Length: 315
Ligand SMILES: Cc1cc2nc3c(=O)[nH]c(=O)nc-3n(C[C@H](O)[C@H](O)[C@H](O)COP(=O)(O)O)c2cc1C
Image (cartoon, rainbow, N blue to C red; front, side, top):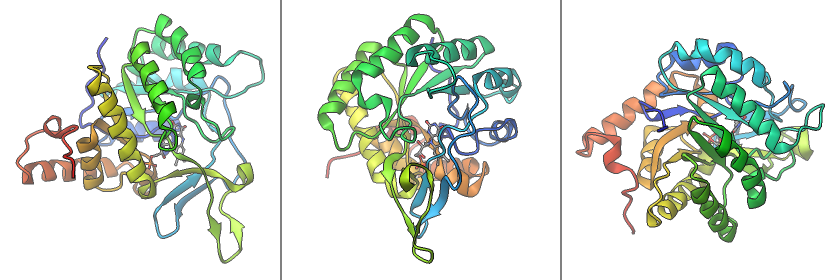
């Protein structure tokens, strides 16, 4: 089954303003091309203790969070899918793992959730292999874990599945290993990137760390990570293109302006997601971004995003 058409090719990133029923319907009514849910886990979770989100740090360069996968639990999201589909755009369910009151192993938790959301009518699954805020070590930093999670899913699930990845900028050997595994597993799309793990910021007035969980360390998102995210998108894009693998790359990270989104498309993204800037601006951001992308395309003589995907030139 092919990937659903995402138009405009701009959606929310899983997490910001996508946890509650009200937030998800607001995304459904917005100018986003799809609704992506918060990453759901087997058990409902309250998440980490507050303060766990610093939405605007250090002259608006970004956000730091360690939310700890606060979510309603997969059963509730499965119930919400039919009503969310009424908005007439694809519903993408983000599936994740967290230790929970029982001992269902990692891969079985993913499988149970994925099957329930497929049955509920979700159009696509985004398999989150990159949550940085439970242990500081995303699942996708271990190729064996990627295989352990994805193989049973590939056998059982019929709707398209993307994988949400952490940055590999500090480990290019690991990148090669994981990217070749994703080709072997025939994933339907790659979403890159999740937040830059293990960042810290300090309030100078009070000399305190901005967030409490995990010793103050959290995931960095927003404009500060744009160049890292562009690097991730371009690296995956080239890797797949050079091997003839038709795996679309969806860019996520650092997008706050239409020009940021255009950079993602030039680097190789065929759709983009917005996290921190959505927190800042609310669901009206999608119309502003898409309007600006369309204007940029017109002004530069293009008639569609497809014409510019991956066309960045060497310096
Ligand atoms: C408050 C908050 C919650 C997040 N929760 C999730 C999540 O549940 N699942 C996930 O895959 N990413 C989550 N993320 C990461 C974002 O989806 C995104 O990958 C990251 O913030 C980079 O995008 P940005 O620069 O546009 O913020 C969260 C980010 C923030 C700020």
